[in-house]
Structure formats: structure tokens, C-alpha cells
Amino acid sequence: MLIKDKVILITGASGGIGRAISQHLAGLGATMVLTARDQTALAHLSAQIPGSVTIPGDVTKAADRQMIVETAMERCGRIDALINCAGQAMFGSIEKINLETFQSLLDLNVVAPLGLMQLVIPHLRVQGGGSILNISSLASTKYIPNIAGYASTKYALNALSLTARAELAKDNIVVSIIRPGIVDTDFGKNTPSPEPEALRRAPDGSILPHVISPDTVAKKVAEILQSGEPELDILEN
Ligand SMILES: NC(=O)c1ccc[n+]([C@@H]2O[C@H](COP(=O)([O-])OP(=O)(O)OC[C@H]3O[C@@H](n4cnc5c(N)ncnc54)[C@H](OP(=O)(O)O)[C@@H]3O)[C@@H](O)[C@H]2O)c1
Image 1: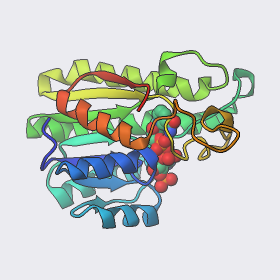
Image 2 (image 1 turned 120 degrees about the vertical axis):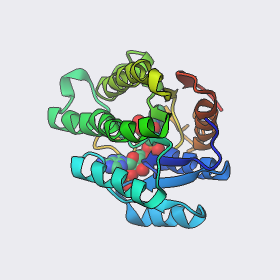
Image 3 (image 1 turned 60 degrees about the horizontal axis):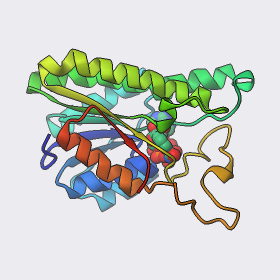
């Protein structure tokens, strides 16, 4: 897909990776439709991206998902691509996974992207095609102790995405996933069970060399949207 002049709806735009993707794709000429719950952060980002549209909402709520897609269509007349970026982590051993928290995580990391795909697909089909990119995680290629709750949501997202890719190829709708390793955002803190700092920072507070910048992820997102490749792992800057 050529990015210039395309209307791209992105969830999780107020946060680290979503914000970087929004800025990068806007720089390549896309009209960005930005959604997340934090209206102030969205307004701040939108002020930096001329022509962008903000639609605050909670993607775990079906009514909000519908409102987001309907408002995007009303304001932009079309949606050419959906990027499902909103997501949250969960840390803890299998024995200690809190089932209520896990249910909420499934709602955010799995049900919300699926629901948004279901709402956007008919528009893409009528328009003759389009792209869907779901932000998965490298955690969904491994079995790492203490992150199974989170990893399992991304395994599910991979299965939904790549099955959608097979189902929708006939409609010229390209579905892809990217799987970043550890990215330098507040993701590890924005969770009910914070990530051990040791995963991304050295004792002196410096960022460890394996930690990827959100800008690197944003560039890879542009590349995969352009190439239409099914999946991409991001291991380093
Ligand atoms: N950082 C990493 O190491 C890493 C690695 C691999 C994959 N990922 C994936 O990358 C994606 C983005 O992560 P990030 O690092 O940018 O995390 P982040 O900085 O915590 O951002 C998370 C984003 O999700 C949004 N969000 C959370 N709950 C929401 C809800 N109920 N409704 C709407 N939006 C919601 C947040 O916005 P509001 O709070 O404003 O709603 C925020 O914009 C996630 O899917 C994550 O699983 C991250």
C-alpha cells in the first residue's frame, strides 16, 4: 500500500509506539485518525500532526469501537488502513495470574482488535481493498516464564490476524502483524503488575542495548504497510 494520502486509523495513539507510528506515517503523507482514552494526550499529539483527527474512546467497549469507526468514516469519508496498537502487559507466574485481570487483558489485546477489524473490513471491501496491521509481540514466539498471560493474548492475536489475511486476500485486504521485542515506552509501567525494571534498564538507569526505540518500530510499520508482508519480528534498532 502506498501511504501518501491514505486515511489510517490507529488505536493506542496516545502512547509510546502508537504515538511514534502516528508521527512517522503522517510524515509520509497519511491522514492519521488517532484514538485512545486520554483526550489531553491525543490533543497534544494532534497539534503536532496537521490534518489529523482525534476520536477519544475506550476500545474495550463495543459502543466506543462502533463510534470510533463511524466517526472516522463521517469525518474522513474512508478508512484505508487500521492499525491495532492499543495494548497492555501482564506479569506473573501461571499460578498467580489474576483471572479478572486476565479477562480484561483479553478484552483489550484480543477482543478489541478483532471487533475493530470486523467493523473496518466491510468499508475496506467496498473501497476495493486496504490494510490491517496488528501490533503483536516477540513474546508470542516464545514460552517465557512470568509473561504467559500477556504472551497468550498475542498468540491469539497472531492467529486471528493471519487467518484474516488468508480469508481476506480475495478482497485485496492485506492483514499483517509485527512482533517487536522490548520497546522503550511506559508499557512496563502501564499495567496492574509492573514489569521488573531489570528487563530494560541497567542499575545506573541507562537503557539496555537490546531495547528498541519506538521510532524503529514506526519505520518498520511503514515498511510492512508498503510491502504487504505477513509478519515481521523486530529484534533491534
Ligand atoms: N513496549 C514494549 O516493550 C512492547 C513490545 C512488544 C509489543 N508491544 C505492543 O505494542 C503496543 C503498544 O504498546 P506501548 O509500548 O506503546 O505501550 P503504552 O505506552 O503503554 O501505550 C499503550 C496504548 O494503549 C492505549 N490503551 C490502553 N488501554 C486502552 C483502552 N482500554 N482503550 C483505548 N486505548 C487503550 C493507551 O492509551 P490510553 O491510556 O490513552 O487509553 C496507549 O496509547 C501494545 O499492543 C503492546 O502489546 C509493546
